[in-house]
Amino acid sequence: MQTRHLTGPGELIAAIPALLGFTPRESVVAVGLDGAGEVVAALRVDRSDAGVAEVAASLGRTMAARLRAASARRAFLVTFTVDDVSLACPAVEALRPEVEASVERLDVWACDGDRYLSPGCADPVCCPVGGRAVPWRSLRTDGPMSASALAHALTDDGDGPAAPSRRRSAARAADRWWSKRAGGLDAWRCDAWQRCAESFPLDAGAPEIGRAIAGLQDVRVRDALIVEWLGGSDDAVADTLFGRQSPAVADVLDGAMRDPGREPPGEAAVAASLRWCRRLVAHGRRREQAPVLALAAVVLWWSGDIPGARQSAEAALRRDPRYSLSRLVHEVAEAGIAPAWTRRPGTGSLT
Image (cartoon, rainbow, N blue to C red; front, side, top):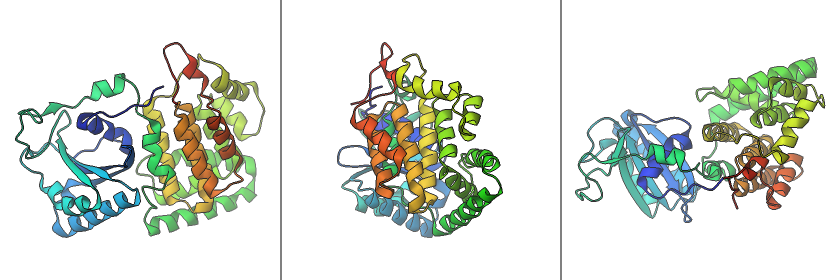
């Protein structure tokens, strides 16, 4: 798998749904890039909120703070709307002063879902009448984006923590859920597995996220998630939860390292898994973050992104230098060992 390099505003706009985990509508999205051109932040607000002066000022300051925290040097403000914003987008202009002051360069674009242009641009070469077609198809077929670009904010805390009230709610739920282990570990682990699934939707509340964070502190629950992400069957997941060394589990783990015939993970699944890990890190206490960051490292490794896996493993080790899964993934990445599917004819691995 080769790293996907975004070569212009069209490809960046096409990448935004993967960066966010959903397709934005009637929104303004800020995408921050560092000095090397890597994505370090992706933030979204409703256009309707940006239309209220007092709210827009607060949103602009928040966007600017997030971009500075992520060490962004260049930013893009992209408005997604079906309104005619060929001359200017009021929502973007309301956010622009704060954002522009936080970076060295700011570019503004608009997208109606099919075509894009720069509001107010009179250059027909840059922005022909009606705009340019968004290269959705070329982005999807020419090769996947670098998963490390999607995870950069996660590994360096670029998105920052969730709101204090949500973090407190998640912490209380995590502590309550962890205390239930006393009622029987096998049953608790199976329930914890279900709680992870309940936390996956984007609209999951802080308590659901807190219970998932607690569940992942248990090695068997964590490993069951890895087995599922590596393509394991329901039986293999159950065997992992119950600690059974079954052929199904061995086949999943051995195949990931040695079977070139294994199917690679889908880009959407990788993006969704990294988005979920990012949300858990944002809600978790520092002592709870190592398992989540180690899981992100596994996802990155399985996607073929060896540098991204190493980076996420290092972030996990900064939380807990003794966390064994982080050390394992870091050692694998340092050795340049890629998943077996990258050795299929016609594929390559990241370097």
